[in-house]
Image 1 (cartoon, helix red, strand yellow):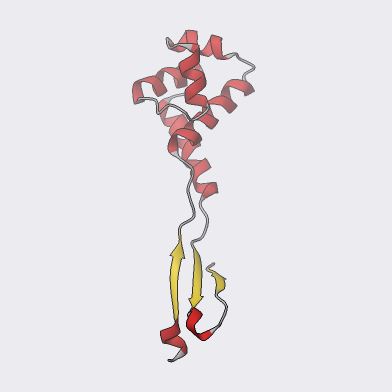
Image 2 (cartoon, one colour):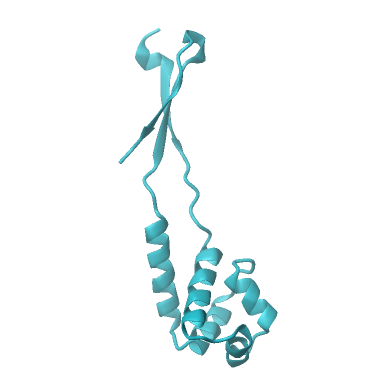
Length: 116
């Protein structure tokens, strides 16, 4: 069996952060940078404090209306939150790792190749 036939290369997925986690982190950092409490921002946004806490922790997927309300309470537009989240996602993007697996029948070890 040729070397080409005994090896196969397959991409290994690198998990990307979930949107709700990224948006929650953006909102929490902005709130804390302003020295504001969950209660204060939730009251101004017209949502409950526990709900805002869950959004910030990435446990709840907020609707666009809720995100706009929280953004406004923080002095931001929805587009600002989206742009900040996009920047976070871009920084988290990694090159795809490729794993080259050699046939175990030949007794060879598999190798890991990283694509740049």
